[in-house]
Each structure stands twice: as C-alpha cells, then as structure tokens.
Image (cartoon, rainbow, N blue to C red):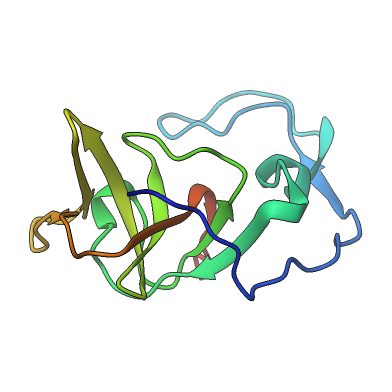
Length: 145
C-alpha cells in the first residue's frame, strides 16, 4: 500500500555554506534575561535543517489544513525523502496524483492522512486510492514580516 517512487524532481546542487550568528544564550519568551549580549557560535541553516542534501527538497505550503501543527499558508517545508515515514510523521503524500501535506496515521492495519484543522476530516486510505508517501517533513521556514 505504501510506496516511495522516483519522480522527475531533481535535487539542487549543494549550496555554499553560509554561517550566520547564533547566540549561545536562549531568548526568553517570558521576562527579559540578564544574559550577556555577545555572539557565541555560527549556524549554517543547511546543516541545521538538511541532514541528507541529496534527498532534501523544499515545498511551499498552500492552505490551512495543517495549522494545528504550526504549518501555515506560505511556509516553506523542508522534506527529506530518506526518512522512513511512520505513524505520527507529517508527510508529503500523493493521493491519486494530488500532492498533500498531512499527518500519517498507521495503526491496527488502518492507514489515513490526517489534517491538523477541525474543518478537514481524516482521509482514510482504502482499496482504490493510490497513495505514495513521498517524503517526511523535517522542518520549515517561516517569514515573519
């Protein structure tokens, strides 16, 4: 019932490393911290989000069905095809040729793709539905302004 197939998408060449400042002190979401104001390390976003460059792709999100998982319209998902999909993973799936982002439900012989928004019912995968789990969402980018 599950299959991962090759598609016409090809990975881009590895981007040059671009290290950005990463402070060693965490940002307080409550009261201000008296922590020192200095740069402690460097962060390469590719190293942080991309474990396997050859199998990693980026997909823009359209729609609101995954809001409960903090995935919003306009976000860019980081999808790794080398991660084996399992119950509870957020996945990119093709259902009868349509690409979706949903949470994978796989228990007691039942399979479904589940939205994270109450307006969208689960999509049970039954005989006659063509399902391809294309990759697992491992991260996202979000522009704030």
